[in-house]
Length: 88
Image (cartoon, rainbow, N blue to C red; front, top):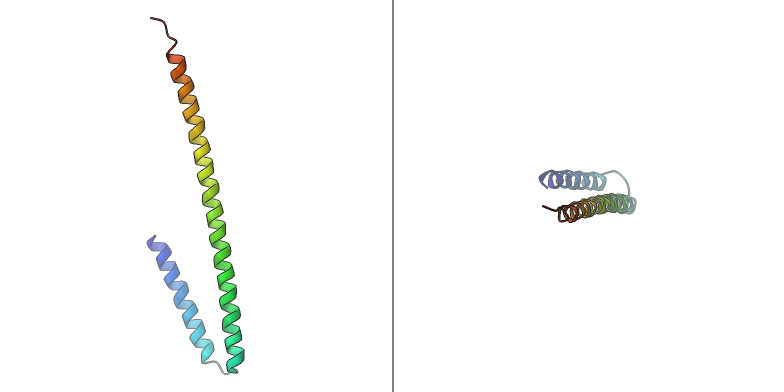
């Protein structure tokens, strides 16, 4: 989790630096504010998209592991049921 926080901090700092840089740019305030709003919307869309991709990936991995564990459990039960039939 530390790497995630570090990346989030770097991205937040870069976004803040870009916003401050655009505020001091020699353009009209309305144009600058529109650029800031557009960029922030782009970043939010990209972030949501990446988060959804990550969530889907984790969900698929979870389902895969869950399925494998069920199969192994069934195999173990079958092998144990077979051991009960041994006649001494």
